[in-house]
Length: 384
Image 1 (spheres, helix red, strand yellow):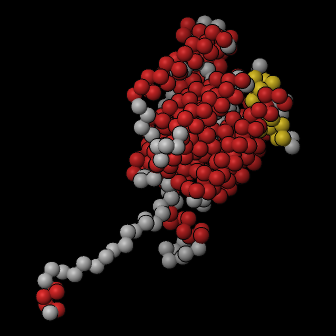
Image 2 (image 1 turned 90 degrees about the horizontal axis):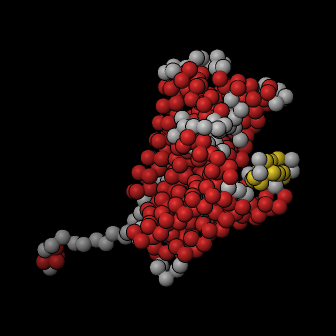
């Protein structure tokens, strides 16, 4: 037990951290390990690996993720900006390298091999991009002569160009949606809302006409024709699970669901543990987003308000996209479920994102104004 009289850095961290956030993040990580046991053995056996290959790796990735998240939560807002800037520069450099030296999987180049480890630079780019854009919006609000909004737009264009070049249109839409929400919170004029809406619609139409895999996915979603195997199996898994599930290890549909440990882990949760667990997972994501927005609303510092809002909106959008695909409310996308889907880059990058949230929402002593003593009325006469 940490005493309130203890003035050590750890004690100060414990009494200033948002422990509800911390509990929610650790709970989601724990659910990720549990669902990895449920979803990944069948996939591992199908591709010739040991049954618990992905489970072991998920646990191995989770340890540094927890360490990184807690370590980052000790930072001050200024240190958060510095770390984010270094991350942004490094991630942009790796994104460029990915286009030339990355592994090509299904026509896309999204991964780099670094010292035998596969890294997806776009995952690390997202939290850094959000924090730096928040800083640019803050600088423009503080000093309108600084073209912070213009620089944020240019940065958005650079990031989207690199994502489209891979191509990774799911992440592109996620980044654009998050940036638009942050710009709105920062006081975007209605004219810009119309312009960005038109740009988004135009970009979606262009993607539909230029990229065959995009048009195929959208057509399959709208018509139900073509290869809808994974989504159909996902709905079947959720249907068989019912309210309370078939029990741990008793799922059958997961054995024939190709991406059951990544994109469709939510369906496995429904089959083995029931719709009740799905609602709990949904509730945890909603809790993080709503609490983050509520805390951001009470912040006086513009940078903190924009950064916290952007990070939890990014977290929420990614969660919604994954779960919506699982229940066929959106066309299929390769989007992981934060903290739950298998993937080292996704897990550690999301831990960095939520470490930023923990750092920025810590309670800090208010800067008190000096109090001047005003003698009570009539005291001069009494003194005389």
